[in-house]
Amino acid sequence: MAKKIWGVMLVAVILAACGSDSSSSVGDKLTEPVGTDPVGDNPVEADPAVASSAETDSVCDDCVAHDDASSSSVSLADSGLSSSDVAADTLTSSSSEEAVPEDSMEVSSSSKSDSPDAATSIGWKWNLSKDDLMNSTVSYGTMSDTRDQQTYKTVTIDSQTWMAENLNYDPGTSELHSVCYANKSENCMLAGRLYTWSAAIDSLSLAVDSSLTCGNMVQCEMPETIKGICPEGWHLPTQKEWQQLLDYVDVSGNAAKILKAKAGWNYNGNGIDSYGFSVLPAGSAMEDFFGTGSDMFDAEVGSIAYFWTASPYTVDNSQAIRVKFTSDSDKAMVSMSNKIERFSVRCIKN
Image (cartoon, rainbow, N blue to C red; front, side, top):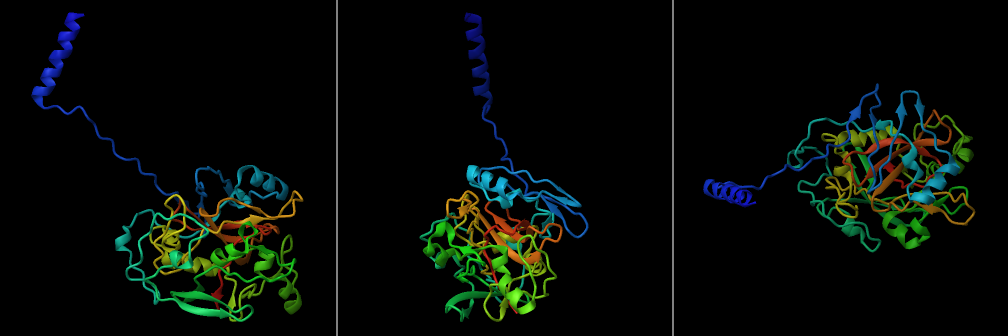
């Protein structure tokens, strides 16, 4: 035992004499963003996990995981997740593998802020004001919806002029279903309404004005421009118009970071909002399949945003194309979801 003690003491003396540092440093592990696997003109991107949950998407060239309404609602009730996350993300904004430092981004636009507000750590709260969520350094335009006299900020990016806020128009009909998150009207004032796809395209007007029967489980030859639920002089953007926006602002796969609001995103997922587009994590809702008399909300407000496009998913009558933003990704994902989901709407000027 004495020999062991002397041995330990001898090692300690030698280390002290040599000035040895017994501490070690380990480099931080960096998680690379999910990459893309190009397939023709439609790259395939795996949907990132939202918050602390993990999701697995399955994709192939000529197939897609189809949402079953009842099974989706059961999953939603059990986990608090939207059934949109079941759909495989088979379309995505273009991206590059090489990272580009934020301070070296160069994108030109008449409405781009030369010194955008930095992203903050402020997460989602319903008592936030719109000023908290918009970019104070951007010069916004405005438009007024003559149907209800609501005023919205607008922003011009490249050749497109967009609403910089989510639409909050109530069509007032059960056929064109829309809701405020958690069925609280005050929530609509901040985050806008959540619409089914049939409501977003205003299927009633299409039937009356164009003799077209479109909507859930029904495919039709859509006009090139769909006014939809948008105000006069504006229309519901197509997949192509959304893709034009994403491609224009995209720098090394970070279109979402550039477009997301600088505050309101949980898990430090805020963007830098360079153009004042100010994507809000308004969550989503879906139809009540259990007869409780109310919609089911996905509990992901603050972490996820979905926007309807005017483009149906031609492979499946029950789905349409949407754009998705999440807290934990700098990429914006273009894919499909069930038409009965309630998502946000942004309108684009004619």
